[in-house]
Amino acid sequence: KDFEPPFAIIDLGAFDANRRDVARRAGGTRIRVASKSLRARWAINEVLRHSQFSGVLGFTLPEALWLAEGSAGVAPITDVVVGYPTVDRHALRRLAHNPELAARITLMVDDVAHLA
Image 1: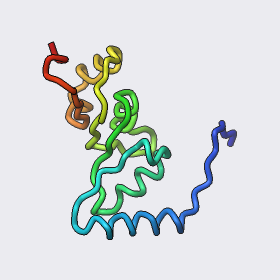
Image 2: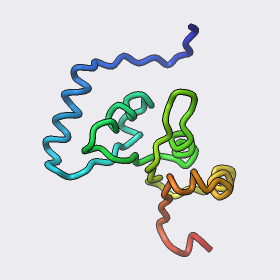
Image 3: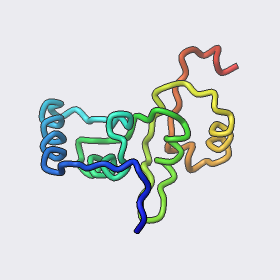
C-alpha cells in the first residue's frame, strides 16, 4: 500500500499502560476521550473498547461528523460532544439534515443568545 504522511509510531505497551493508569486514577468514574489529545482514529477506538471509557470530546464539528459517521471497517462513535462552539455553516447543515448523526453529536454554545 501507499501511505501518505504524516506517520506515527505508537508504543502499544506504553499506550495500554497509560490507559490502565488513567482508569485506575479515575476510580469508577467514566472517562470521555479527548480527541485533541489522541489524534489517531485507531487509538480512540482502542481506548473506547474498555468499559470505563465512554464517548469522545471532539475539537470541531467536522471532526465530530467524521467520528460519528464511521467508514469502511470502522464503526461510528455514537457519543461525541463538540467542546467548542461552531459557526461552520456547512457542517451545521450536514448535522441538521442527518437525524442519525444528530443523535450521536452534542454541540455546546457559550451563551443562549448565540442561538438566535
